[in-house]
Image (tube, rainbow, N blue to C red; front, side, top):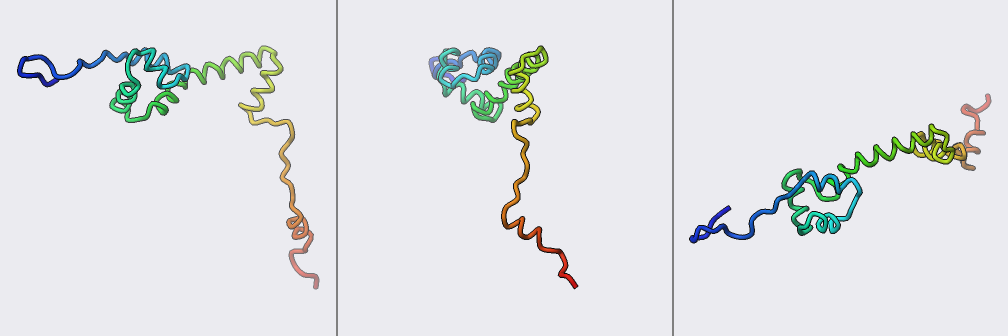
Length: 124
């Protein structure tokens, strides 16, 4: 840090930024303002630190840190489903396995029905 002619540093000293605390907070998908309050710093400081270190926005970094939470919730949902929770089993089948209540049958439009009735080659 540059110094004044008196030998004292210019400006405020840099804050101690604890990445471990921020990463743990981000597992709960808080707002930037909530993070700033919990970290006892300005929200610009958090944005700047993330941009300097990782080259991404706060939102992008938060989504990356949510991976642990998403995995934990998915594991718990599967555990509940396999333990006999019928509601959770249905939820998992629909959301994790792509099941649905009604089978998706492609519908034929009126134009397609008319065209399919026309023979490919004219009668001879």
